[in-house]
Length: 114
Image (cartoon, rainbow, N blue to C red; front, side):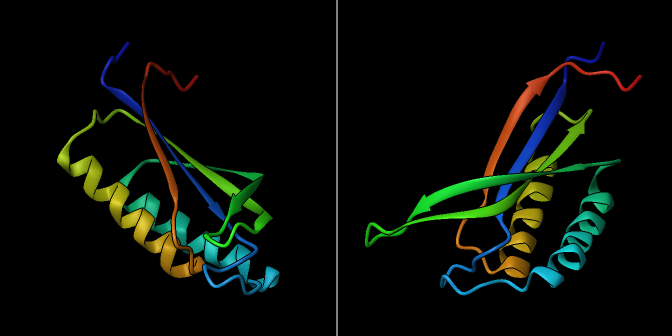
């Protein structure tokens, strides 16, 4: 089994922009499609999971919104090439969904697609 494999996860909201204005829910599937197409230029596959998240703005107001976790499993170990692809995906998510931040985790894993 390859020991240089990585699980990459991106967490982001799809209900509110960074200015707390509503994102049109009818636009979300198309925007997710743009993200998926970008991911597939760098990786062999991905999966989206619907989530709900909460965050607090600097004034102390708490927001709860629908979101997604995007998961990628790759045979690539952490490297400048991998970080470049991750940064491109983060930039696209921020742009399309007008987000201030995207949560990103990179975890060394061992996986098999059976």
